[in-house]
Length: 113
Length: 112
Image (cartoon, rainbow over all chains, first blue to last red; front, side):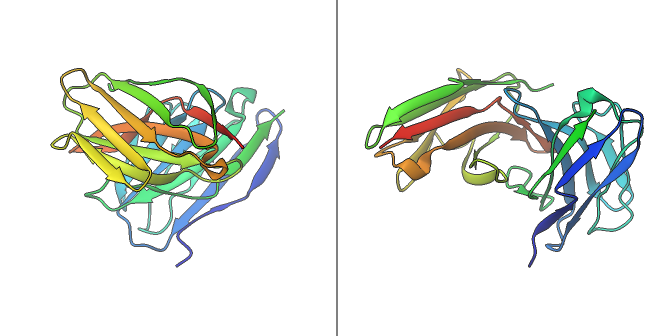
């Protein structure tokens, strides 16, 4: 099992550009989520999904879109990048009944200039 | 929504000493309390969790305690080793809420 994978590992964007962060898992987990990690602020939930076709907003959803067309994939789209979106982004997955046991991907370090 | 506060933000101990990290939560309905460890440049990984029907749980040198009345829970690491150096995050969740709320993290440094 590859577990949770994310691409790219690093990305630099200019203000106003858009891009998609990819996330995939091969553990057949129903639940997937996106977090951003900023210094001193822990991990904050952006969006999550409890299954294909079902998504919901987390704590900091503004400026991000998600979709879940398959169980395996959960891409995160930045619509118009802003410097405030400079962060490390983690994708995570878990079994539906075990939200406390999340498996994280390796992260994407995004810099917006 | 749920709010989780974590203290201290940094903690330095000598090898062999104990370390304690404390968290408080706001939603009395929360009943899952996991702890994650994140080594430098790596992904967070679950190290231990406790449910609200249990007051204490141990796993070798790591223990977690929960006080539901006071709405706080703690991570205890005994006989610390340099490889325990990392950032530790507490979190809270509840049945039916398919998300975790994380604390802001504690950077633990174990001095050899």
